Length: 425
Ligand SMILES: *Cc1c(COP(=O)(O)O)cnc(C)c1O
Image 1 (spheres, rainbow, N blue to C red):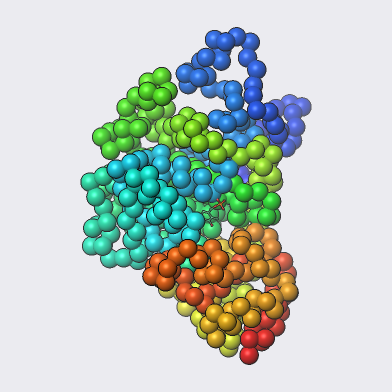
Image 2 (tube, rainbow, N blue to C red):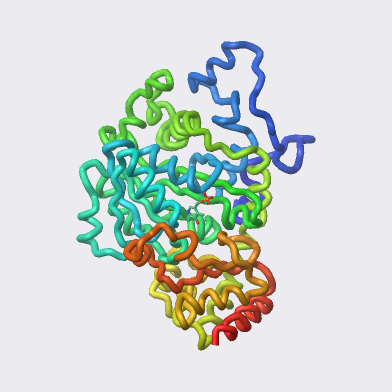
């Protein structure tokens, strides 16, 4: 199946007389004929469902669709993108371990790593995604367990050199985790460039309609855990909390990572989406390929307009030849990047606020990447926990306006931008 077909059909194949849409199995629990049948599930000897905190059929169908879109071997849904990134990293790194992460990442992920996971005893070294080879090399330590970056950083719009970072990670015997939220598998499939694990905030383009918060983790199935046995004891030695199962032996490279994340982390932290939310996410996924095409078309036209407008101080959109990431975006995302643009309004922070208050089509919202055009001033909202130095490292200047171009008629969007920019004179 091609990607557009997978958006509609992957993950669920109705049998004769079954529902055309994925069924919503809105049940916390599942019934068995004997205690022994159920015991096998607890021992991970048989696969099946017993309690929705661990797994649910509706959630699994949607996870299977995203896994197919990314070209992975196993996947799981989480109740948010935050949970997805937490699980993906914590599945590999614990107290006393170290992680290399890009500085250009989502503000929430930066807080998760630099504050909350640091309190758990995990050390993070943040590197500029465009750092020198020497700087990248120096970031790794004996106890490094993974490398983390975003395909297109939110909100800096830095395009990550996946191939380069995958090579560096593999040279040090650790996997590369890529948050592919902004690009979506429609525009970039990080596994094709060497990434090992992909995460998503499905809240963004995948849902696409402001309806459900959610996340996903997908495994490429290619990282050889047993070849790095000492680095990843959680995957390569028996898990006492699960009847002594050794995940990498029992489930192979294809299934070990996701099985461990489900059996341990979902069991203990419980960030499971409701089956109803998974169903809504699936509706979004069905039109993802068509919507991404329109987001990119509209994004390109809006970016070209902004670049030509005299009220705009600077603009960053990887689809513009003036962007320092234009060539890299062409390599990793030949069909377009996303609908998110960042730019500065002449007159700094105050002009940015005036501009935003005059918008009529674009809405002010702490959200990006869905059908509705919206704007945000990150320095005073999503990134307000950061000091100026951290803001600069994350690529967020005080005058930065993040514009997420929706799928409305582009003429309405441009006319709106034009009149609101004029108001800043
Ligand atoms: C929004 C976002 C997240 C967090 O996802 P939630 O679904 O809001 O928890 C993580 N990464 C990126 C790139 C995001 O844009």
